[in-house]
Amino acid sequence: MKRTTLALALLLALPLAAAAQDASSTDTAGDAGNGGWSGSGEFGYAAARGNSRSENLNAKLGLSKETDVWKDNFFLTALRAKGDTSVTTLQNGQVVSEDRYTTTANRYDAGASLGYKYSPRAYLVGALRYAHDDFAANRWQAALSLGFGYIALKNGRTELSFEIAPGYKRYRPADFFVTDATVTPPVTTLVRPGSKGEPIVRGLANWKYRLTASTRFEDTVLVEAGTDNRYAQNDAGLAVSMTEKLALKIGYQVRYNSDTTPGTKSTDQLWTTNLVYSF
Image (tube, rainbow, N blue to C red):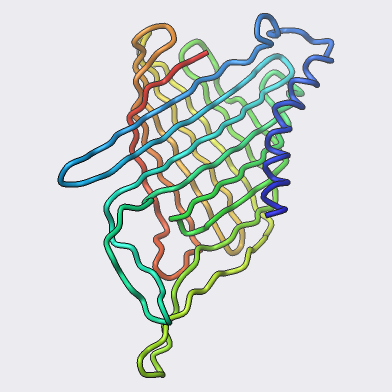
């Protein structure tokens, strides 16, 4: 818990540090109006009642800033769902399954990166990411890295950038059941693995492309590779503007963890249809 609190505190401090450093910078290019910051908020919700019950909610907040000196980003996402499902519990050493209306998805993650440009295209970047998921291969994971970024292409229609950095990651694998079949009746116990830590290499690729004046596509690939665990995430989204501020967006996310516990899968996928507000 202390590590989690510290990670979140550092996460929230990164964008504030960027703003403070930029305010004291002598280079004021791009700092007019709101200080160069821009962002968007996404929200999607669905509910069903009758023969079945379910509720699904997902939300995302993203902030970014790019000037002649800084290239900063911050994000916060949440996913929560409830529905009629079979729940497995442990009672007196026996596995018991029963139907309940309960939480079927509970995930939130946050991240920030602070980039300092030492040329028009190249920059130093420090990144921090924390994720918690009650239904994934890892209950939580936190990664910190420091390295280099490069803007390979940028014009009025498309942008392509890459980042590579060494770093360090801690994570805790999900709980799982172990059954002792040598006794009668068999006894099942719940195993709660301890957290793990290892050096990693972080890689990020981000591509933005404007198809038309009102349609844009974005794809972001993140890789955190260590000796024991390799994590990869791809976020793709297609947004169609309805007004200057509002848009509809279809998103697809896939996440992969190489280190899994019994009963969990290495790959998770998520489709979303959201209303987006840009500011």
